[in-house]
Length: 399
Image 1: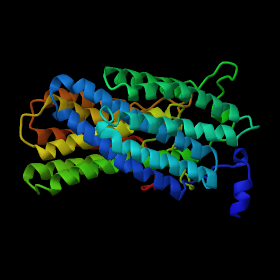
Image 2 (image 1 turned 120 degrees about the vertical axis):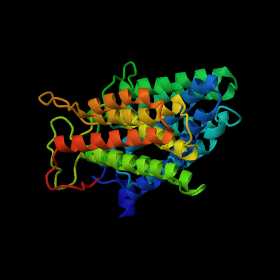
Image 3 (image 1 turned 60 degrees about the vertical axis):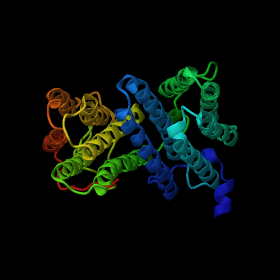
Image 4 (image 1 turned 180 degrees about the vertical axis):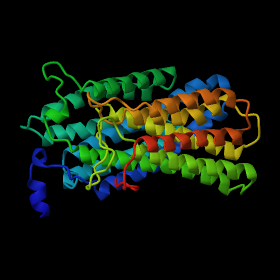
């Protein structure tokens, strides 16, 4: 059976409807990576204010780069059969490379810049390079060649930034990431090779991809529990810490409820018997970026308040606590495909506006009260959204 699967052409393979165990194993590395990124956000809040924007920019760059890797691997496993031995090797190699990237994050703009850049380039070039070889003679090979071309261009910029230890590193890496984002958004166009999307050349399992998005969301959600729980564990319980811990838990439940129970435009409010839920939009990967980024900001904000619940509260911390849920709501609003005949639900946009307005006077409140207000508003949004989108008897949808 293994030999038959190995000899079968990659282009003829099909992704299963459900995610494989190896894909879940791949996500374990991102548990560590997200924790590293959350640590960088926390550090950004405690450094000298005049360097805040530059440090936050570095964190955003790392977060987006890690997201690009995950997104492209999720697309790979949703297009071809990840149970094949060759694709398992590709996924495991990417998994190890991502682990190296996560380890180098704290000093990527310092002594480990070359290691970070080289590892990232190997991951991003190695994947399409193998697909170009394995798909030779198949129409979908053209797509892999286009992806390889774009990553080769960005790879030069990544390596150049790694070698340059000064201000040029940030410039080169920003340009490199911009190249990849533009390529991803425009279907990696190359002169004389067109810009046809992968979906027109191969069958991409949207059910498999949606399940991967759901799983990654749950991993990100665990970061709120991890940050809040770890912050309470060492000093122990107090009135302020307990209130913030409860607020963090309420926020986790609200995030979960909104993500899985919000109904996209044109979709039936009742889940199907097979558990198929999300109908992803073209920009779903970018929406997931906002969703996960918002959850990480929320986790860091609550963790910081637990560590230092005494007033006054810093305006940057207020921005993190309220801005995280706003990013999540905006990302969730555009996660699903919109049908021309169905208007987009405005509930999440209204909720984001309420959070933004509530943030302004919150700079005068004690830190613990700020977390409680944010959690209560988020819970109210989840309840209101649930009333609008009645899911019938289904109260715990499958992935």
